[in-house]
Length: 230
Image (cartoon, rainbow, N blue to C red):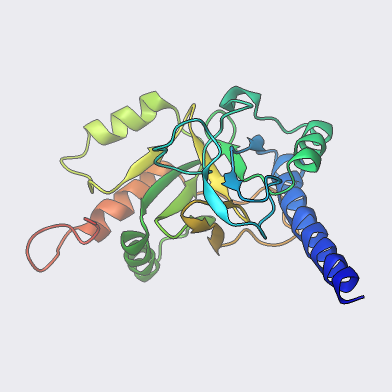
């Protein structure tokens, strides 16, 4: 009897996880028109991708993968879609697969920093009165979502700067970003600044405004260095 009750609890827990993961992917794709696809995910001792199993590293063939679980593999990034039927099929077959956003085009792009620098940056930007859009947080990096930009425009913006924080990464056209509530090799992915519940496509700031604010926030460290150099 105890074993049967335990199986039922695990089944209810797994269904609730599956519902949350699929629901998040559908919200991104159908409500916000953000093209998504399942990430490669993690190997587990149980072999079924359940979060109840012990993670064994990235499920891709690379034994030294630097972003375990948090990248596309099969399907590749070009398969990202907003098609509801395909998304339901993907996450029905792989219910705990990470949600990968294909950045660029008409989809959001992002600027990311190491987690410690990201927390410092958000405090500084709030103090400057900077209006931010959604912010994705992982245990290692925080990503500020911005309006779509082309690689040409990004190049022009960077060329016009004398200096930008070395900790910045840019997720633009042809790139990808892992979204909540995914779980990767570095831990749980969450919203540090979540989109408003029930809203239309989340508002996104312009990349130039965010880049300018980050450069300003980074200057003036006591030793003359960068406040965001982590």
